[in-house]
Structures are given as C-alpha cells and as structure tokens.
Amino acid sequence: MAPPALPFVAAFYAALTGLLCVVLSSLVIRQRLRTHTSIGDGGDDRLGRMARVFGNFAEYAALVLVLLALIEICGGPRWLVHVLGAGFIIGRLAHAYGLASTLAVNPGRSAGIALTLLTILVASVTLLVLVAQKVFA
Image (cartoon, rainbow, N blue to C red; front, side):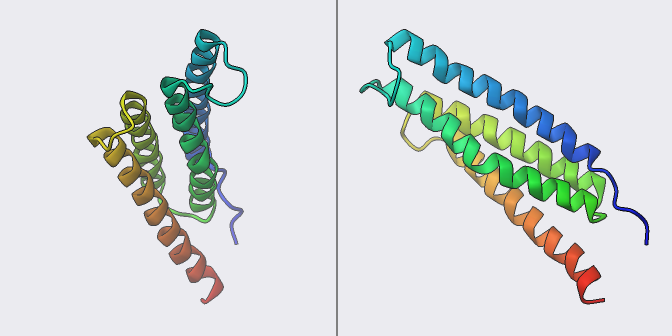
C-alpha cells in the first residue's frame, strides 16, 4: 500500500483561506476603530454586518479545508480538489461582498452560500465514495 499523498493542493487553498481570513478580520477591526467599539457592534449596522461576514466565513472554513485535505490524502483527483477549493474561495468572496453591502438577500449572498454548500456536499460525497472503496473493498 502506497503512503498517502501530501495534500499540497489543499494546502494551497488553506493559504488562500488564511489570507481571506486576514482581510475579513481587518475589515472588522477597521470598523471597530472607526466606531470606537470594543465588544459587540455598539448598535452600528456596518460593524454588525462586517462581524457577521467574518463569522460566517469562519463557520465554514475549517470544515472545507479538512474535507479538501482528506480527499487529497485519500487519493481523490487533484483537479477536483482545485475545483472545490476555488469554488469555496469564490463563494466566500461573493458572500462577503453581498453581506457587506446589505442585510437584504442579494445575488452575492445567494451565490456565495450556494457555492459553499455545493462545495461541502460534493466534497463530502466524494470523501464517502473514496473511503467506502477502501473500507468495504
């Protein structure tokens, strides 16, 4: 049995996710400094939205990165890890832009959540298939 592959493609998307994390948290910090708000949103709608943008990103990032790494380690196609990783990054960017703009439902938010959930769904099913081939073979 060959040793598992190192998840270099997943690591690439982990690095992009880390950079996006820094950008989104910087937006929250900037708004906190503008409003002199240390905790919570201080009643500032923009700060509340920016905090929610970051929070929503953080809620999905770890799960997606673990799924991508496991797909790659378990021998899944690298092209699929690229597609899923790119879909996640694009989805989170679209969602962040949409939510930062308004609390109303809008195309950015809708596309962002659709891409994110599609990424999780495809990654989860792919991982189940890969693991089932090893466990039940």
